[in-house]
Length: 202
Image (cartoon, rainbow, N blue to C red; front, side, top):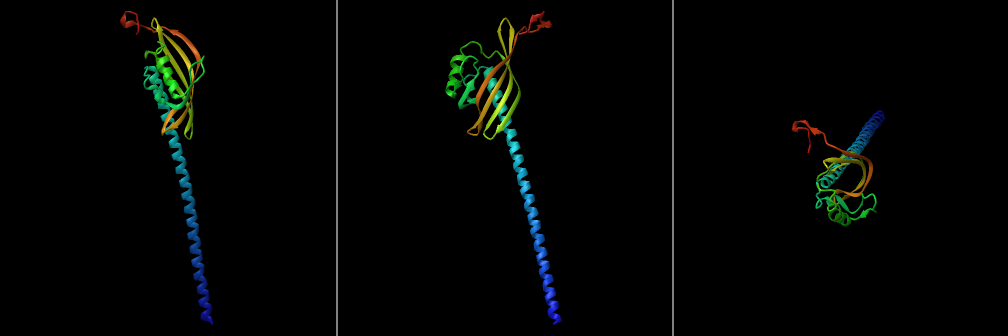
């Protein structure tokens, strides 16, 4: 009878040990699972933030390259920066142009032949504010147009670019561009060059 009691007690002790071990194992598994889920969420968040930074940098380069093409009158390349259904609202006294084909015609048949943009100006694009939401984004820029219309005087105009962007075939494109003039700074005569007998700098 005593042996049976001892055997039963031993069996209960073994069962309790197995139960405690299994419980601890399950708790460790649960903790490991929670840690893995937290780590997965952290990695996903970092990946999203990195992708957003990459998108913002690509959009910045897109807008800068567009302005460079405008500055140097590269009319054969400039429409590559627009989406197929882009809206072009840069003319103060005209309705916006719609579609890449219409924008291309405007650059090649109007702007290029107007005599106002011959690759002799200097434009400065500053202070970008860009927000990205998936495959769409919005941007706001400050831009200075500096032209030399006559007699070596520079006309300076400050304006605002309001832009929207869309990811098209894996690349960011301009889907909406609006220019709003803000300040006309008037004509500025370049300083004289004392090393050239006081002649105006060119």
